[in-house]
Amino acid sequence: MTPHTSSRRLFRWRPDQQWEGYLFILPSFLGFLVFIVLAVVMSLGISVSEWGLTGFKGFAGLINYQQLLRDPVFWQTSWNTAFYIVTIVPLQLALGLIMAVGLNQAIRGALVYRLIYFMPVVTTIVAGAIVFRLLLSTNGPVNSLLASAFGLFNLPFSAPNWLGSSQFSKWSVVLLTLWKNTGFTMVVYLAALQGVPRELYDAAHTDGANGWQRFRNVTLPLISPTTFFLFIFQMIGAFQLFTEPFVMTRGGPANSSLSVVQYIYFAAFRDIRMDKAAAMAWVLFIFIFAFTLFQNFMQKRWVYYESE
Image (cartoon, rainbow, N blue to C red):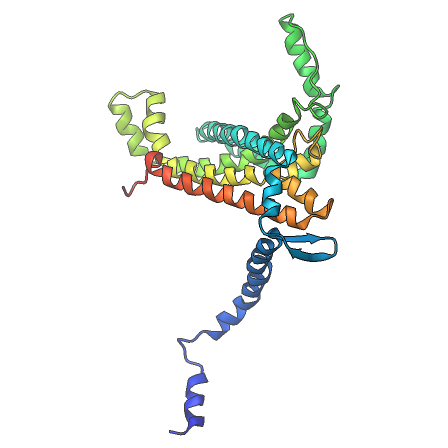
């Protein structure tokens, strides 16, 4: 057999060699390599370099990370992000579950209610933020309703400055985020509730369990994998919160609502400190990775899988 014949057999198309499929995925694979893998490697290199407006200036080692530890704004944004995590994630899970349980009942117009509650998810966040800025203005409808409610009980009321006060600015971001994303949580929980076998409820009812006991001992364990997924998903989203504080308060006043990702954006594109921004991005990645690993380990204590 000549070399020419062997090469023809090697490159001859056979039914088990789907080269066309590899050609179709090649553009996406190249995009992944360039815009994800290469970008991650480059960001790690920039984080240990001195990198400014003109590009690479020299190797800096861990200086950028050491400077972060002495940066009071970074610690303030870390505290703000922690506030968003401990408020948004539990409230969003609780409200989404309550809405899903209510809409899982046989009520008239359930489909219409599901559509209404899910509409904020597909609404443009900038448009929603503009509406919320009007609602939460000092003389806006929210403060008017609060004044009326306090007036019914003859209680003193001072209109909160939701957007211009460091005491309430983070709460305005929390309210916008809950309005925007709770509908997604509701839909996911609703799908999980509809997957719970009806026979288990009937068996619990036969054993004398009331509504709360059925919910606690049947519903919550069977939807715990969904809760775990939503918890991880929303926690990562809260770590990476950017659009809501950016369009609502621009991080103010006095950085009181500035998130870590927003500070990364300002450091990179306002202060032209790509090295500092890359270092913060890697610190944020380490925190997200550690929290995810911890929760993945802790799920063994509270997540129930039917196969177990």
